Image (cartoon, rainbow, N blue to C red; front, side, top):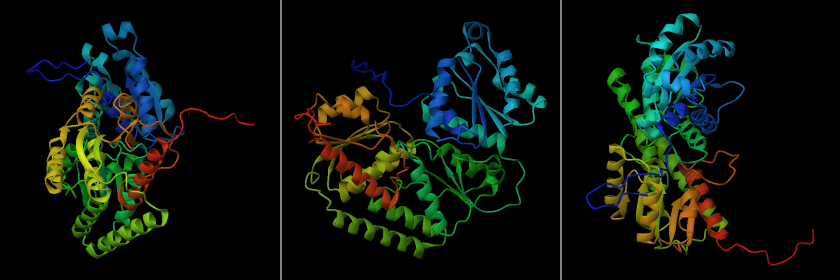
Length: 444
């Protein structure tokens, strides 16, 4: 339970986010064909398996291993086990090996950096140590830790001859369960704006992609939860410009249009961006008209957003302007200064003053939902169960975790993304009226 005594902060024991170790594994596994060694007990190794799935990694190319530390290694250190495991990884012939340390070995003082340096002459691949034990923060902190390690270790000091390209940072720090759809949408837009080379850091990223980072034309952070530190590093180290820095991500009419126009202006392709916005908005309006968008239950309905900042912040314009709801509560899973600034500007522009909780945990969200009693919640499967005793009619599940099988990568960004969100809203709305009891006997 949370500590609610006067003068003390509420202490989180039921977080939405996993630990830094998990976030670091997510990021490392975005490098194509790599090998990841979890220097950890076997339980933490399970987090690496989960990260493997989140990155949609190819099991025929990417390998994960573990030192599987037991009591003896946790007490006395496991550097010898790590040394042997790295040498065993030679059989996999990976282009690069990432060693990620968990809480136990970090507490007892295992020096994974020294082990990697000692064993490096004995292998024919690069080794990148990533010190990201769970106690260093949540998974977003782990993403930032891993990105820093990758950029410092894999980007060459000398300037490469190759020029150009846009790097998309931290696309996986997104609660859309099929965030790859958002990444692909951004890549498609950049191609239409004349950018021929678009690389993600990290998803399906090859080792050679790091060779030309220093000569990039610019970068875009595709998350409000992680990746900003990497963009700041690229700017200070190599002078790489960041595009769309202070804008909400492109969800809904307003955010998508200004995101496109900002990008078009910076890339010298504003007429193309203008046409993309005009055509996209026309497509959404026509599609909703043909399909019979039912909006009566949304009009002036008090609503709550419980999600990460990446999806949660840009949802404000979408639900307030496009769907005509009234935001009463915003619970975000993170608390980055940049995201707080964007959220404040969005609320001021919309002239709404909802209750806002940064770095929310499940307990805080449920108590806030009980206090504000919205009619509609944009959240996850967690909120669907949390509100069962609160008599809140609708929970639209748009954020991870979602108890649905998602075979197709469906974006939230852009105009097709709007239709994907609207479809989810209507499916969950109709689902409320589905009978919970079987009133007939099937004949088969």
